[in-house]
Image (cartoon, rainbow, N blue to C red; front, side, top):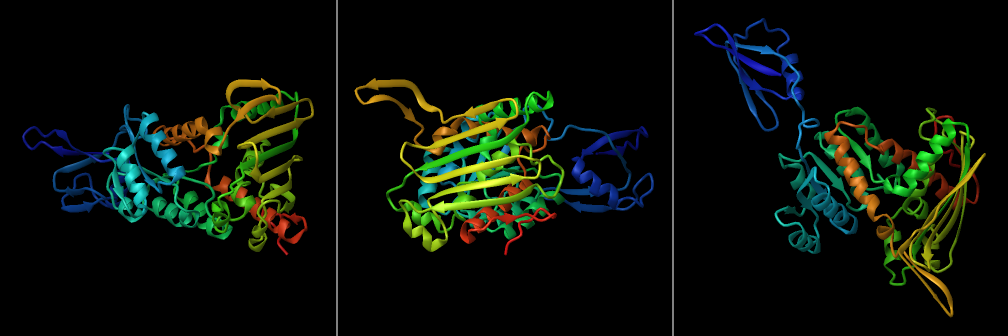
Length: 426
């Protein structure tokens, strides 16, 4: 919107002040009873500006470029949490994504403060998220804090009109996730994207594209997906302490596999509330028997039966002995497709003990490029005003399945889903 001032000498209107469209709608509604010319002084205080509307000002509207369409616009991002995942996001956004600018980081750890000083020169550091939310120049936040803080921080950001990239899960407690989903639905002007990084992997994207093409051409319909995710065995004891707050193997390790299955099997676009028919899970204690005290396990098997006539099987492990393993196999009516764990390099060694290739040591190594694509997609969806590739509802649906699998594992019984899409827990 543009405020025009009447030139008293020539009787013409001249531009006086440009107001962003979001403020314009507020102002127009406030002045709905005004006549053609305003004869009263009004003062409007916005987040960072005070606007004085005085006599001889006339209002007219026109379309002006927004932040999403201004050429050369950079997204100003703050990071909440600067641990392993936060540091990965910080480097990608600060050094590799040209349309992004990291302006601040918040983390209570002195180690994080030192890391920011050494790796993000010129970026402001704060010890609390509240300091970030009080800054006037933040467009978006990346939340990589401990899981117990995800929901509250996301809601704070949404209420302030700040876009969010949130690491999974929204919460280890599904009930704490509901307010986040509702807040995201209400604020259509705020983008909330969940860090389901596998959706941004080049090989899995190629698989997704092929499955859609085959289904559309009636060449093949997928009916079964088998996913394996094995984290390397940790002999230091760190994992056991971390597992206490992780939400369990299905919520922590399996949530990526669950989301991937919904995406590849086209479950999320079914348009029905009831997307899952039933689930069944079992688990083993192989190297970490003390996990039994937490109702958890170090290896798990699961079956998910969807209502669109597809199924998924999962093998989740925390005891991998050959680096990080992640593979997915899809069976269709006319074909079978496999995305296997890639080698970390192209060297193949043959000696007296056989043939060897180096595996990807960690999850970060396997999906390193995907994290870059994910960061770019987040920035692009805001600056180009596109729908987020992953949503809070995607995360919520995956969490419902993880919750049902956990209950099935602990009870030894299958869990059915009701017509409302919720698991029926005894």
